[in-house]
Image 1 (cartoon, rainbow over the protein chains, first blue to last red):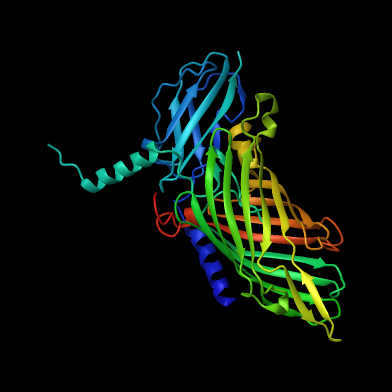
Image 2 (cartoon, rainbow over the protein chains, first blue to last red):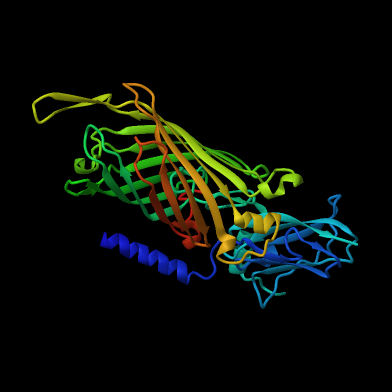
Length: 120
Length: 316
């Protein structure tokens, strides 16, 4: 039993001390997931729970017809390695889908999508 | 001409390979769906994981064989991927029995081993199907705590289905997922005989059993990340309310009542570990006389040790 408790303590310490190895999940975004906004944003920004490899992570903004409307200038952020962003032009009122794929620094891949609406 | 660093090139190539290939998820993912490890229902996915410990306690009712007994179990389970889709698992449980008015008994229950193969995954429809065999190793535990002297082999099918493919009109149901298993418990001995105190021979029959378990969960992380940001922040954005049902129905050899529990509870899924707490509500008096509880600390070894014990032995 003592050995099991030692293993448990070691694992808990390892989990507490681990800095950069886990699946990158979407923490929040701007515009927010499922939100309705009144003004077109200049950028779409995604904050993840984990540091990313921005060169191998992607984010696309699609209109209702599935046409990519972002400026295809996806980039990370040196100050915040968990942030992925892409510029968008003036978005016309309508529904947009954000499709992302994130490679965390320990090479775990996650993916997802969400929508937001722009009102006139 | 600038000379390229071969190590950097190799690292970049490796990253490019990972990025180009399909998602390589260690634990229970199908597309964007994360299936948490459930406490009583066997998971449909193959993973590198460790449950340490799982603690449960429930009071079993009095029967012809003995008085009502408080049964408390401390168990450890580890799962290891051999390949991306094939895994093995081992489990051990230390049991404490406290009969009403009787002496406390302690000891190890039979050890268990299993093998599982994930043969189907559909990311768009968040679906996983697996098949496996569990082996309860007879005679490996202590008779004092009721460990059987015979083995039970249970072939089973496992499934996981997320409802992220529901239409827009049902978007708030998308965070729902169901996992479950159905298996047949096959004892290696049809009956056991023993002598009672007054010299009579008592025969206990060991029926085949239909074992069904499922879990219905509502993932707040899924709601937040893919449906609608409700403004939840830690720890609430990592909670997954769940109800598990575990049933066992004897099929032959004298049969007997179906037993089982309904377990409402909550899971918290962090980056490296998961915590779970559930109530154990007996479905009938043959199962239990009072509500028990179940708690678990579960570690994602693929996230904790991604380059060593947290990856498949063979393959990527």
